[in-house]
Length: 582
View 1 (cartoon, helix red, strand yellow):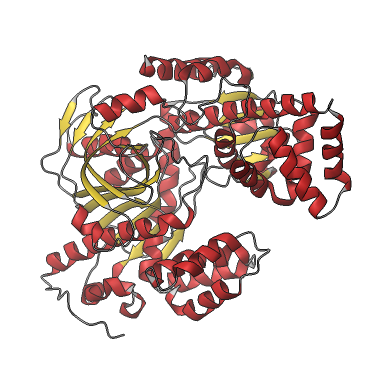
View 2: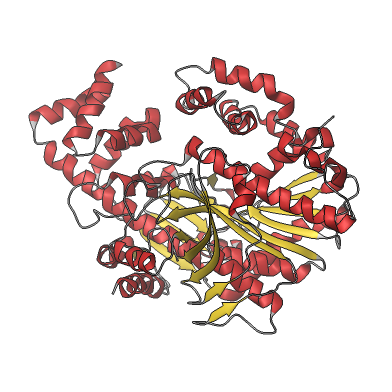
């Protein structure tokens, strides 16, 4: 029944979106509620579900508060045909926690590029949850406006100052029956814009309409080929196409931080930033936490995270240019996302990495660098089925593919936030296949670099269609079947691996065993939330500093694996006790 409800919901929005006209988001709400999403547990209750609301807001641009129409499409021509050529000049906007190409007309219309069906499975439930929770708050504010005391509180938001406004905001959270921690997160999300946002909520209900342009499989293939073109151009221009290539799906900061030395060269500046960060800074709480970890956690890990906050605090665009120049001089080329496929990439030439720049935990591999002709292609991990298209394309165009690795966040049904999980079996909701494979990574390979959490191998993962598209019944069933990792990319990646190593397209509803592969293969997940116990979800709180240890332990395991394979290929003996001398 749990699977049926999820399937019914997905079928509802996919069939309604076949319409050539706009469809009201309200039409999806009954199926959304019936599904009983574990991420939106209070969807059918009049009380606000702040966790679901915050989760949805983080994955939608902030301008959604003013938007009445969302147009989804695959390619620019589709948007221009419906909205006119001026759509190309609309403002680019971003969501805090989801990479996607959005454009806003500054008024009531928002466009979004979808690079795979997984984008629909992500965007639509977010819009439904956002609108449902907005309308709950609107109803509550409308009712309470009739109360003289609450009217005074709302008025003070406009006319009060300082502590009076802060007190009114806290009191309003109580009136709206939102827990203090959740209300504080909501207030922090909007900052100085909270009062204006509350007035928008109080003014009217949300009634967003959506329209899908295209949605055809061949267009996804065109998109990924356009995505590959600039990557292929970099390989060709640098004369490194055809070299041994290691493909990594992770993020765009960890591996580069380990290899480029950018953070190492700013060590003193970053420690001063930690010591001198002003209390008023919007990143102060994270910096304070980093300061407390100093001396109790790996210094490099702390500085890597600090550099991210330092860049966020300094709006000077030249800093980014300086970083790119330094990285390029060391063989690291950034390739920005393009063509509606919002996945950035990095081309890394190992031979040009400088030994002095290596993270100290990789120092023993210095002799490998100047002898290796290998290239690492690191991509900003794509969402869901987009990973299938990218891995398939890379396997198609790469003549000497040495490895495919994936590192990403996942929910855990048995572990704790910050733990690292390594699976050897994956059930994929898309293909209904169960994939068994030899994972290149073991708990020992990660635990070497892990200081705070646990490394757990021999786990079993399930690839779900979307974060909202799961409920407690399905989670319980998966856990009873000993699935412990819930994520979105492993299944599609394995489907692409099947097509890269077998003579036909991946099957459906079968058990697939990869006993041997022509390239190295490994998947690492680190736990970001615990939805089964409701102890922690990304809607109630972000991963933040807690994820640093797991992120860099995973990245170190990947780079160590790559350099070890290269050392073996080159016939080099790596001394684990070899001191590092720049």
